[in-house]
Image (cartoon, rainbow, N blue to C red):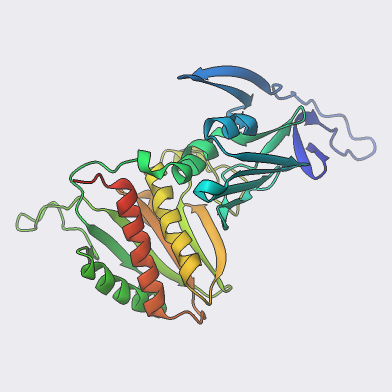
Length: 317
């Protein structure tokens, strides 16, 4: 059980578990102590903290590498800010929810404190934060067609209305939607297109929050759980981890900017059959069933999000 310091787990410190009177003291094998080392990556040096199988990097190194104009550390909170590029990241040690730009985002692992320094997991830096800061370096392979594979659950009436407006809006900008891929066994079927993205629209009754979901990276828990997935689940996933995030943030940011009547449920990391089996960048948008937002407005915002994603990652001819 981790010792709490200001509510934050501190690496490398353990406390003795509670025992009933007369209960024999259990034999406890202490975990290996966290170790920090200096790694050279290209022309940059990173302070990498290894704790069991997980690696973390110093926030001060992130500040320097991405050339943030300002870094503020107040207790267990870290704020990285570049006003000129309108990027602000806010993290709190021990908490997986973060502020990304002006929106909620969910980390795979909470930031940690070690020897009075704060660290971010390498998984989150590489597969969440970096694609958001530098989306243009993750260019989509050539040959992509402006086609969206769109899936809507049959009983989601609001999502179906949004999908109808989305389809109309995409066609107005020279893109198209399909609801299923042609079967490879069908000799008369057209060739399988190289899709721009896959998108799942669904609705939920729980709250007024709208959230956008992308696939949790290999070995990471989903946003509402702390336990790691089972070993057989770790092998499953989408090869487009970074492009998934670029797509998810492109959609979520514009939805939050332009749609009234919904609250920010955040950019979440989850696992679903739709996301795991996607060969292209994929995202799932969950819309509150009782929202005051109009289906046409939601559809138009998603069109803008997809166009924004396309402009960032598809190489210009």
